[in-house]
Length: 539
Ligand SMILES: Cc1cc2nc3c(=O)[nH]c(=O)nc-3n(C[C@H](O)[C@H](O)[C@H](O)COP(=O)(O)OP(=O)(O)OC[C@H]3O[C@@H](n4cnc5c(N)ncnc54)[C@H](O)[C@@H]3O)c2cc1C
Ligand SMILES: NC(=O)c1ccc[n+]([C@@H]2O[C@H](COP(=O)([O-])OP(=O)(O)OC[C@H]3O[C@@H](n4cnc5c(N)ncnc54)[C@H](OP(=O)(O)O)[C@@H]3O)[C@@H](O)[C@H]2O)c1
Image 1: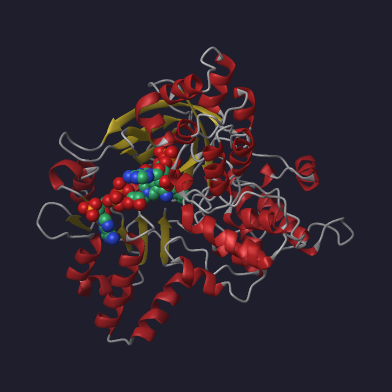
Image 2: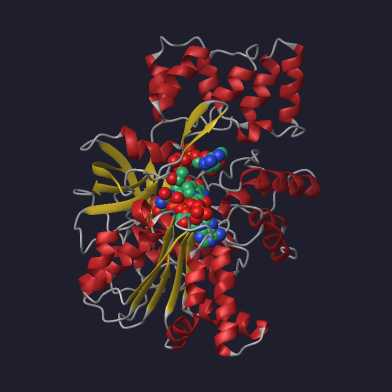
């Protein structure tokens, strides 16, 4: 229950009042959720700040579609009878990743309230989300004020709000020293390759020094990283714009601007600037959504394709969206590595139109920050992905690829705490010889008796693919036994395919081994979810 802290006469709507009451309750430690792992003191502060509003909102309203592994049509179906802004929310990728500058809920509220015009900001949702938003907005007619007044709640913790409410909060409560709006200038310790030579992948163990920050995370939390763009890409852009002699613009482009798909405002301006009629015509079709080429293009692609559409470089830079931070699941325990945070980063590199494209943050961490140099970071506490309260509770963890990250943290934490619960890890990647991430550490955890079971699925070591869910099926009887003993079941990694395939396997195993019907197996999983025994951290 939330204890009301704001007087009824305070100048807020009921929704705002509820939000603020929860916010203050969280900060003051009243009625907020526990962090579930006996690490309360460590995670108070930053964690509480962000927890309370979510907890209150959830107590009043559920968001059953808020599951990144759920297909779009199912999400929209669940929001069918809900208000306009909730339908918009159901169209988002449900990651709360902050790439749009909001959370899924607040981005949709901002669109519904008419405060946000761009429908293409959900990066992980990509074209699918942009199209659906457009459809929903068109069906709704002209954007109206929906009474949703929290449009300025940006992603991350509460104090990022910039309205008068934000001012009110700032004057009343102490803020965490560092958060998304004031990232901590940490130092990179090292970015070590986890794959062996010959691998098709580049996964890094990134170690960051938090000394001096007081940032206290708990296993299951994520770290936000403010990246910098690749200087070679920036130089090429400035060359194309004829502004190679502008160090001020170069600095802004490296640190502040998104060089990915151009914003709608910029496309609009390019339409106006194009002097070539064919280019103007094509840009108009892009603007009007009649051609989706732009959805997978970056700024350089666009500038090269429309050479007649030029404006002053300064104006162009002002129309670029801000470069947003990326989230990474934390792969260390503070108890095992005081004043450090570790990440497991899959480096994004691919070639398109003969140009090597580099994921901004993953290549920043892998290639561009020298050891000892600055990385701006903040904590993104997790409220739904945590160790069981009871150290004796068995855990089953399914984490292929970078999905292993939080489970390394879970295991380190349980080891440091001397927790006696059984631990079972399913790990998978392409090839055992080159992609067995943290192999030595995992073997050591086994030898120490911490990791009770380790099942691996190396997909490309044989003609037929073998995935983690195949290993789950191989061990169905034991898995069912662990579930019946009360085990928590965790999944981390790819949201698009893996999480739903693992979910299907889990349902099948429960039905087969428990002798349950499809409906009964669904109810069993729903009960696990409600009890916090089925948790997913997928992206
Ligand atoms: C809660 C959460 C936890 C996460 N934890 C982790 C983690 O532990 N480890 C981890 O590695 N990542 C994790 N991520 C993902 C991470 O935040 C970044 O999205 C990821 O590192 C890519 O960011 P980037 O800046 O390097 O790439 P960006 O510059 O953002 O580029 C990525 C984009 O490139 C495009 N793209 C990628 N590959 C291709 C291709 N082959 N062909 C065409 N287009 C392509 C896609 O549009 C993709 O969205 C997590 C995300 C969330 C939301
Ligand atoms: N949202 C984002 O911005 C973002 C950014 C980066 C990564 N990601 C996601 O994060 C995932 C993690 O990347 P990663 O490089 O660590 O590992 P990954 O690509 O998930 O691969 C790890 C292992 O999982 C296997 N796999 C593929 N499909 C599967 C399925 N349906 N079920 C179970 N296992 C499956 C892979 O096999 P094969 O490859 O041999 O099929 C591989 O053996 C990526 O798949 C990507 O979708 C998202």
